[in-house]
Amino acid sequence: MFSPIVRTVLTAALLLLGGIPRLLGAELDPIGPGPFSVGSTNMEVMAPAGQPMGDFLNGKVTPQHPVYLADILTHPESAFALQVAVPADRKTFGAHAGTRIPLVLYVLYPTTKDNPRADYTFPYTETGDNVFPHMQRAGEKPIFPDAAARYPLIVYSGGYNTHGLWHLSHLKWLASHGYIVVDIFHGDNRWESFGSAMAVRPLEFRAALDFVLQHADFVHAIDVGRIGASSASAGGHTILCAMGGINPASPNPSLADPRIKAGFGLVPFMGSSMGIWPFKQDAWYFGKDYAGLRSVRVPFFAVYGEKDGNVVPAGVEAGVRAMSGPATAVMLDGETHSLSGSTTSDVNTWEILFFDAWLRDDAHAHQLLETGTSVRGGVNDHRTIQHGARTQR
Image (cartoon, rainbow, N blue to C red; front, side, top):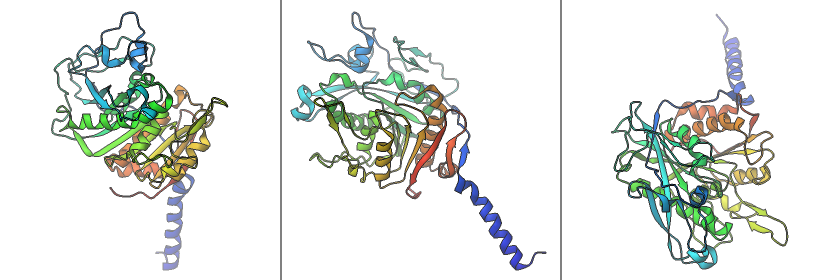
């Protein structure tokens, strides 16, 4: 038997040893695809004649009228297509001010292993993935693994002048983990300027979320208390507006959406000066000191590249530090804005842990986020910022 003094010393030593991994951090195992097969909403198109498919995916201004993906949908009534009202502010929105513009989405969702629907190969090959799995044909409804269950939702906003096929592989991976995932074809090239496209994106994001939450096929399948936002590059600005970020110099009201419970940003754009004089353009949408991000109170997680010349590391770090809610940043060593394929397992692992923690209230995921400082394999990555206490929703 140990004396009381010895027992006290041993207990203290064990507690200290148990705390060493937390103090030193831990290398996390990469997380692979989830257990679910994935289904998708209708994305059938008629291949355009005489004009590149890329013009429709990204949008394009032509002498006649802008072209966009909505123009070539085979079954627009079965696709996820809507209209977005543009404010009557000609200075900001140019020729589109006061009009309604089309917006196309697709939805990926967990489905049954025996879903009999065929995949659909989108007629465009200049992308990493063009296959929509178990796609619904005209008039068909989603098939969920559990018709009575409600699934967490993630709405995704991609980088400037990118389109939904760029993100398809990644979003299928998220859906395989039991999330309903929505992607937005922003069609940035329909706009006369970068500023106009950036200004309309948060409006498109809110319209997309409204549309999906009200859609008869998904209204009973989505857990409205567990909605997250994910993004890349310019999409970081888009979702941060939805999370409460504001432009201190603008009289426009906040676009904060209380339905968003957590946001993830890959190389997230938070503001910069672009170009050189006399063509220099300031794009400090949250202020040069990022003061507009102080009103972001829901959790945010940023993954960024050490050598990114477009979204500079110092800007990401300053923006994350400015946020009032729980915020974390992880740097990918040696990576530029165009991340290498080696980063995939790192990014996927951090993202799924983040959403499992904050949308599913998964205690184990929370623990890994709090103690983990890097992901094994992939590229060298390391946590640079972590602030804000874990709170119960």
